[in-house]
Image 1 (cartoon, rainbow, N blue to C red):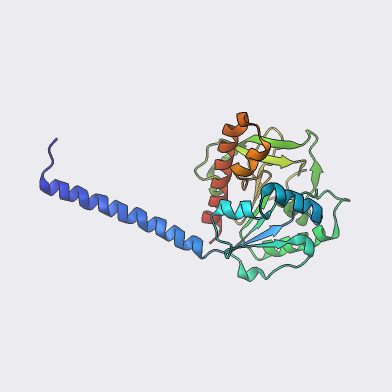
Image 2 (image 1 turned 90 degrees about the horizontal axis):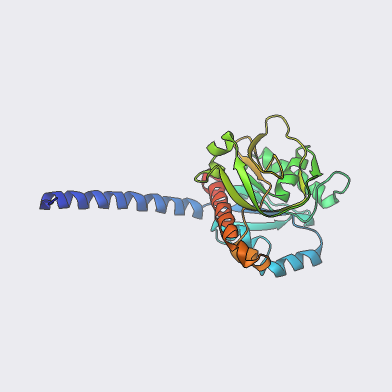
Length: 265
């Protein structure tokens, strides 16, 4: 087929139009991301030696993996150690991420600082802030709302886990762009005992029926670790596991970005 000069010009104009619109969308997303500020509620531990050991293994503060997964600057991502019992004004933040934890929030084993953290989590929910609870963050949020956390009778879940999205999960923006069955990174011994009325399951696995739970439109709780980086996981993994790790890391990063792009306004 031979194009005339007029047709060539029309094609060029169309391509420029598409390019302009795509660039405009990318610029809009970048500008929106620049204006967002996230509070990272660090519930790792009150044990200084344990924290030092974890951060030595990570080669950075515990919050850094999550910040990098979101692609935010240090000005936009503020970490607060919940074990110190001092919490910021939520008006300064557009969304909240609650970290994983070395502490198991099982009734009868909870320390005082954990109970203080529960009260702050209730404030977050009352303020209707977008909230992503990661692993221990899921468990602390469930406890804050009066739910029950138990040790998994199937044992500890560590490593790459296959999760399956429910019908609701396939429609939820947290998993937008992801397949129905996908890989994630896990490291936990406890799970939710049962859901309270109104809570919705978005994903499950062989290890737990509650891998991801939705509480209304603002709160998303995941039992796995979407923030994990390939660099940190390769330190503890065998070379034969790197392919599975890569898949799980990509899934995790997509989930983190989805939370930022679709839940944090």
